Amino acid sequence: MHSSLAISPQAGKVQPMKVLLAALFLGSCVVPSAIATTITVMSIFEPITLVGTDGDDAMSDIGEALQASVLSRPMALSGAFPEDLVDAIRSPHLLPTNNENYKVQEVNLLVLCNLGLKAEMVDGVLQVKFKVAEFAVPEEIDLTSRQILKLTLIALRKTLEDYQRRQTQPLHVNVIVDGAEGEKAPLADLAVQFTVVGEGT
Image 1: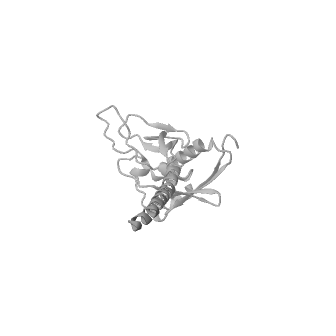
Image 2: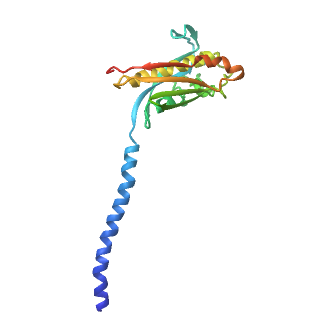
Image 3: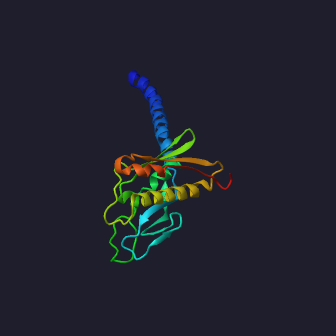
């Protein structure tokens, strides 16, 4: 009888401690998760094929009429900006349609041609690699490799310009053509550096 009365108060003290520890543990798990799920809707520009449609797009930036275009679409993104904006340019894109005769399953030229993009901040400069080692233009795409890279440069610049409008510091960008060897060596001269400024700069 006496032993049970002695144990009972101790048990009463242990239980709240367990609850407190569990709450602290759960709190440490929940808070970082909530922070990591910040999502922002951004405009992403992509080079897309117009194959399967009845139009050509006059690309003033290139000076050629191509069966391709650089268009934007909204995307809900989280992560490190502007690096993840660059990654998003290569997102798969099934173009919506109301015409049953339109059969194109993918329109993003980066996906269709296996052109990789990689972006990282290096000493305050956004370094973007166009990874061309596995880059190949399918027969149904009536474009040259150079035309596709030029369209990609336009998409990159337009995406960063839209993002940078809301920033107060200029963004310095260094574009590298990575893997330009053999017959792809001439693509290396498309490497470029530019600076994007915001409206508040």
